[in-house]
View 1: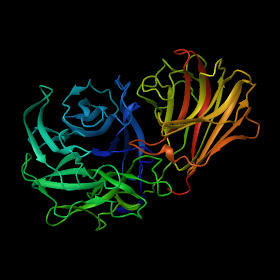
View 2 (view 1 turned 90 degrees about the vertical axis):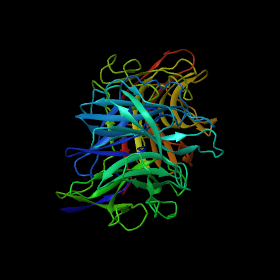
View 3 (view 1 turned 60 degrees about the vertical axis):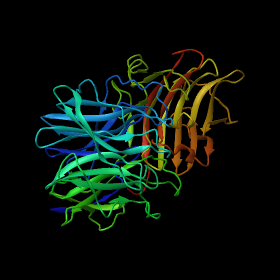
View 4 (view 1 turned 120 degrees about the vertical axis):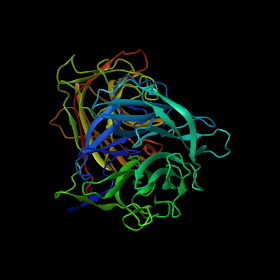
Length: 523
């Protein structure tokens, strides 16, 4: 047995609500994708130390158009039984109080990389569903339940469970209320595990912010009653204001290569102690079973660890490479995401000009329907993005370039557009909290191709351009505080966009490459 030092988070950038699963000698983590498609991102590892992007599960047509910010695909759960992978997820259509429209679905596949079955509708009574396969062959479906009658802002009323009939492809029988939650409230993210003579129910409580926590209950019968761990919560950073990992919760459990146990859980790393611009990330930590049968962190506390130990069968060393380069030869690299629509050839065209990505224009940056933005997660506090583009706008309503995007109310855009007096120009726009501002700096661009560069270092963003590969970079502008790109359920994305508010698909921009360089000095 070997002990390997691992620095958290193991999945950097927007990778929330991790669900960990072991099948054979391979480990998988699935994370929430919210309004970004393809949906349900999956990473894999052979030893819990080094993780690689593997696939996205929701690659079929998913109707997310018009879904509000912070809705769509929540808290996927993976399980494996009967030679099949099972994936449970929620498609949230509205979170406006007092109601919540959250539809739960099940899909299956013989391979984690698909193809996956058509979705089976389960229910809509609450979000964060999961599926437990009992040793007697029965399958149990769990979810948080939402009660609009509650007077609190968050109306999570506990955890319910119902049997799933795989032959009928539907829920059957009685609905059991198995946990009311604790005083921490906001009870969600249920997972059941069988260990020894008990069924263990792991839940998230306290909300996904500062008070986020992990709570455990247990019962000798699957339907309860469940007894609460007297020393709850098992994990929280709510009493650890100096910890570099905050908002710790939403955990799932797995047995490691040497027989030890670990939880994967959600955390954030607030920039300058203020805001988590990278979004909610994924960490890992060892846990132990006590003599009286409860689950505890192996460090003897309830605190998350920035640096932890993972026990492996062979010596290993953690390697994290956040770099990304797509030169647009033949097909898009699979790590790209788009907002509420799939990145496909109808608007991400690689055939018309070989070696180039042609982005056909979509609606405005605030659209929740046809926003043609192709983007990747920001995974570093310090990074540089570069690209080379060709674009010939004819009106001020046509624009294309590099977009830093949290949501339709918070973004930074360096883009080429048209000015009635100057012709083709380069500009910067900003939306912070829905307040739109346009930089006074306008640079005429006479030549065909243009190179763009954005460098973000902490809270400062700098924008550069040059007219050829051999020219020195010239600074276009600087934003001193980009913390408005943090907040909500997702993290910041950076990518390429093309918009036309005059006509649908009225123009296009072409890009010869896109490169992201992560420059964080420490893991």
